[in-house]
Image (cartoon, rainbow over all chains, first blue to last red; front, top):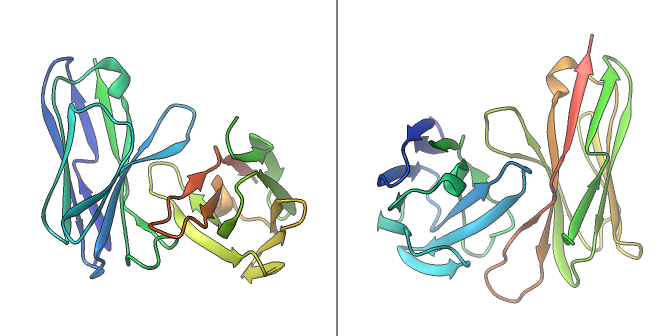
Length: 113
Length: 114
């Protein structure tokens, strides 16, 4: 009965490849987020979707493209992977009017070689 | 300079001892402040949340304090257990009037040794 799940948990790939990370939440939340946690452990928001619509798009290269097929899913597709994309990516969800109360997934550790 | 600074970066204590983690922030105005616990290889999990008008909030052995005048918060852990070993992240939610974007500190990595 995992609340926010991500797949895969680990992803190792080569530079230039295209990869996707999937996120699903069963909390009934309307808002979902993608965060990147770098080697210094800072969590930085990348995208936020509310009911399948993009509401936050921080300064993220357009190689990153989120896709929300429905409000329970927010997938992250990354084109032409670069070494600097190596990080842990976290998905989160919340009610739209309680954005301060976010529930996080377990993370996906992406390693680009 | 990050808007949320935490200290110390890392801390080692013996099981059963108490410890206090610090968080200084410059975010203003802010809606609320939360402390998250992040176990290795897991996502952050919320421990406490305080609005700007609250001074203290407890959750079992975890007690958070907030001084909105000095823009400081602390997380006190009493009678530490091995399972307390984790990163503790201070997170401030700006009062943006719209969709709030959380601002994260870098965390304090706590190691509890037997």
